[in-house]
Length: 318
Image (cartoon, rainbow, N blue to C red; front, side, top):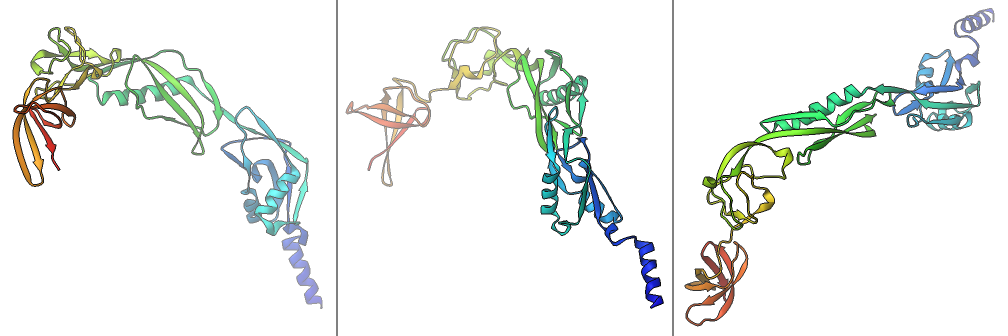
């Protein structure tokens, strides 16, 4: 009997009272949290004899952090319900103390304008250097410092638009892998590139020939999208006239007609496995793949045929 009593007092001395195995929680009155979520340890003081239990309870996620500049008030009863739902083994065993509500704010940090500008400019330079011989970039307007949650990460978006005199670089600010805010940074851009320019005035309908163009370095940020090179026999012609010294905009170019009106052309007529070749006169101009009217030489009848290649049309007879 004495031995059992002695054992009891030893256990009591080492472990403390049995109720000490529990955990006491006291909400703080007001806290600033970092990151995208906050946990029990962020908003309450946890005490108890079991460090393992305190850490496990403290890691329970309570809610999503409010946006920077805003706050939210959460009641002790709400916190209790969340904890008991996520750790049901502690239901009725926790000792709640202190305030019955807490105000939660998100801690912020100033992202200075210089840092934003450096990231945006470096991103734009890397994108332009891939396709341009030389570039000149300068900010159009100042960038203001902004307040954002701590731990924010700046990520510039891919630049997919055609370079122009005023080009934006969009910066996304991520918190916990989610876009928290976005900001455009505007730059004045000069981007020089070797491009073909007309040696003389060229009329609409002129076939593109390399001999009609000279290569010059131009600031293409001041121009619409232009052709990077000219090759003979490309099957392209000018949709509109181009003056001497001007580059060729893509919009001013179209596919050449493989057949022009009044051309004498070869006609291939297919009937089953038999192919008959004859000649005819094109009643209209057409590009490869288009249907045009063709007049038969001998009968003067007009029929539709598909342009197969320059000077040749084809039609099927069933």
